[in-house]
View 1 (spheres, rainbow, N blue to C red):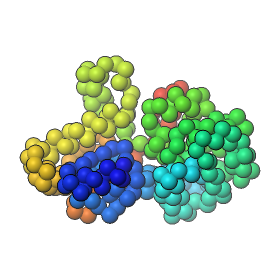
View 2: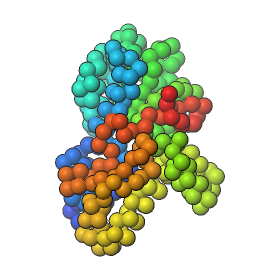
View 3: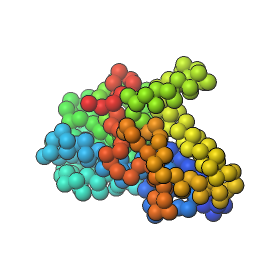
View 4: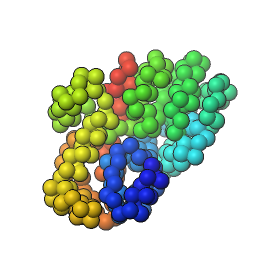
Length: 273
């Protein structure tokens, strides 16, 4: 998170992450921090792109939680939806720990959006909304942030999550991803199959190893080697994706069209249609 990144920066320790999505960790760029995950502003671009491709005149509702992180995340998504010219007809907020979210779900249904975007940080509360959304027979498709790609989400939301769509940095149709998975399963067992977070971690370790091979293992030489990566092939994002860092950019993902859209089906994740 932001606090851990700030401490690593203070100590001049090269630091890299796949799961931190807050824009502030790399915008503006930090000298020692590198991100292979998708920051929320880029994921928001991908979500807006997906919506526009399916319905150019679509209207959306946004559901978020009121945690500090949740508001930061949702603000990035709202900004990108508006930048894409997508009207937001309703924004509903859930206080963490709220058991009954009927009121929010009814307001969303009354607003009649074409899509509902869930953007926040409290997975249990937003999963609770999804269940109510389905129980009230709201037919607007549900989309969400990268947060919902965590393996625990499918278990938490249950059958109500069928068809849920979210941005991801792992494309399971890529041969390189399948090769990574086989290596992971060979070392850790079959139970690790299908976990995109392990693919992400594998690629992160491969990137850091490349940095060590090229620059050495001291803090500054490793940092410089990572920043010097140019057109380095990585098994994340869309096919043919490469990493190019610079003093002005420490993000692998810089555009929405580099992001993969995933869908929850029968409790498993696959490429969205």
